[in-house]
Length: 143
Image (cartoon, rainbow, N blue to C red; front, side):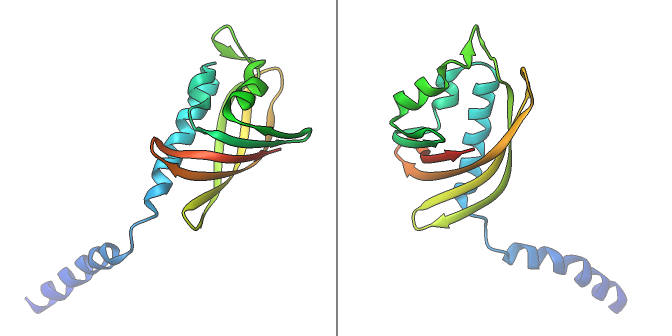
């Protein structure tokens, strides 16, 4: 009987240890979900759905300079969205790191486009801030 008790303790111990592990950053799940929804909007050719993740006062760093505000950022992307599709293909993100910076989060990810005229890939650094309507991108630097 003592052997059974020791065996049961060994089986149950990992559960107790696992339960003691602190919960992950609650922002992470919300940010990941928002990113996946944004990518789905891109892939479906739905600019509004793609842009829903951006704050109204977001900034976007491009090779040509700084774009200020969600409407201007949307205008930058608009040429890719036509006829219910995106001419650049399907968007997927590979999440590499999410860091807490005070009340904000910075997501480092690789973006991937496939199925368009050419396969494209690059890096993005996105600063998220918690707003009344959820976690929103306030700064985007993608290359």
